[in-house]
Length: 159
Image (cartoon, rainbow, N blue to C red):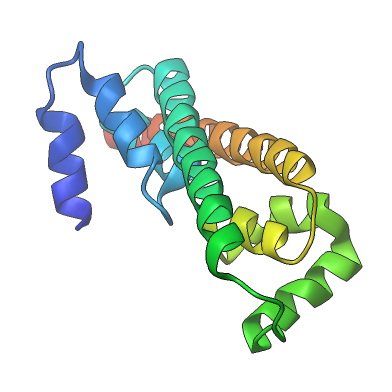
């Protein structure tokens, strides 16, 4: 899968690579941080790669939240949360929406985290705000790490 994604970005015309990074940023588990990393390593300008990966991740997260809210209203009745949802509820009680949004990226894609938080009763507006902040932070952080890693690799092989 990594090879296919890599070929997708590097095979695109440089003018269109930013669109490839947007598409990659929209994929759950790759998201803004993976998209930024792959884009930079593929040779896309770091600022463009980070911004494109963040945009892709935000678009997919907002779309998933909108669709899940529409579906949830029509099919979900009050029921007891499962074991995984109970675990997330404990995290929400302990860290709040900001903490789960920022730390949730380590365990779940932002799309699933947002839907789960809303399903547990958090206000949609607050979840979207904190998920947006989280996506930006993780994308920028991994963009910075990718630039430094690329500099180290270039320095190492240039010796």
